[in-house]
Amino acid sequence: LAKRHIPIKKITLRTQIASHRPQPQQKPKPRIKNIIGICANKGGVGKSTIALNIALALAQANLNVGLVDTDLYGPNQPQLLGSLEPAIIDEDGYQPVHVHNIHAISMGHLVDKTTPLVWRGPMVSAYMLQLIEKTKWPQLDFLIIDLPPGTGDIHLSLCQKIPLSGMCLITLAQKLSLDDTDKAIAMLDKLRITKLGCLTNMHGFTCEHCHQHNAIFS
Image (cartoon, rainbow, N blue to C red):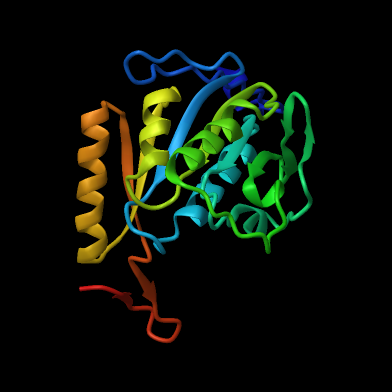
């Protein structure tokens, strides 16, 4: 009984991340345990910021994390990461940029930010797959994929050819955004992709004077 009053001087915690089952007909990537998609059917809802914050939170938990920015026309992750340095490219693929303990790759790391990409749908899908498959990832517990808005070619190619542990949806508490999210949910159901949840961004703000919470949308 006396031992209960002896203070604990050291605690060691170990975390083992399991590889979750992807959608039917897909097998996990050899060096990546789990691939998580972050999607929004409507643009401007803060999806890229949330994708980065999820990656940062996992990295701060001492997990090995990768981040792919698949918005090829408007890549935002290099700016959000504060790292505009170009990725190293060789014959075998791309070396991801390591910043904030995250291994990241984006079109913004591969081409000059002033260069416009004038590509058709099939070319965009092919390059999106290259970003994932030709990047020299280290052993990863999680690979977070920041998807462009909508339910177009990139989403279909990702869901049909990349083993996804699940998808997280981002929306605003606003009818147009919520209606578009319903379409994204229907797409995921049709493709048999696991839905991890839906995050409502910009729900409201707290007044710094009266501390009342105010909803931005009705």
